[in-house]
Image 1: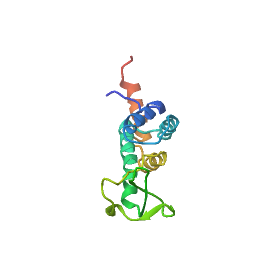
Image 2: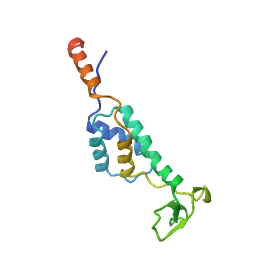
Image 3: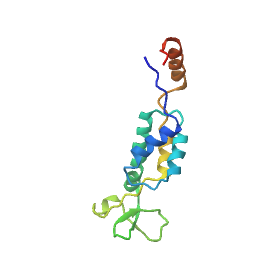
Image 4: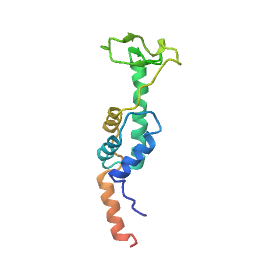
Length: 139
């Protein structure tokens, strides 16, 4: 067995940015760093799950929205109930070519991080480190 440590904050930021930036979002480089710092103890696999969860948030907003507003291009974007420019309708009232999904946001990622917990516990990490110290090879 070989113990491979969990990714550090910079690696986690990189994983999130690499996987998450392929979808339209409004995150800055500083946001990706913040997310990397917020995911201490997460594995690479955990990071993928966080990204997938965050990417679904805008879709869920479309599904649950009760009010939509027109975009400059004529599409319809979910909005808040108090938006004076919004129109009362739901997803099924909108022609599919007019629906505009919101960009993935920092809030979406933070919500995903709060929902998705690390899959590797501290005891497992200590056990692997101890095994490596006892039986592992020197480099």
